[in-house]
Image (cartoon, helix red, strand yellow):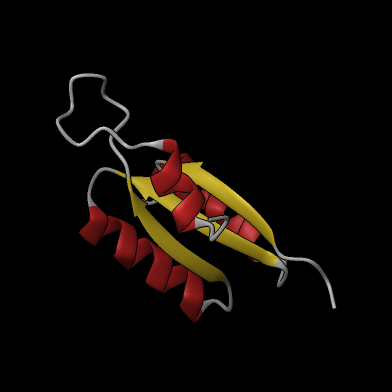
Length: 83
């Protein structure tokens, strides 16, 4: 059994970020964590990856330093189940 690799792709719900997510999702041992501001758009992108056979989940994340919802490292670890 292969070890799962966790990939956090910021902006993974659209454009180049989504294409990177799609490429990484081709490997069955990869878990793609789509980190994006809009959780609904992220979930739509994750669902597309799942329909194509990939494993994906969403991490709502706004890297703007003035955002009231600053993500902490613990939320990232929780998203990839390291805690």
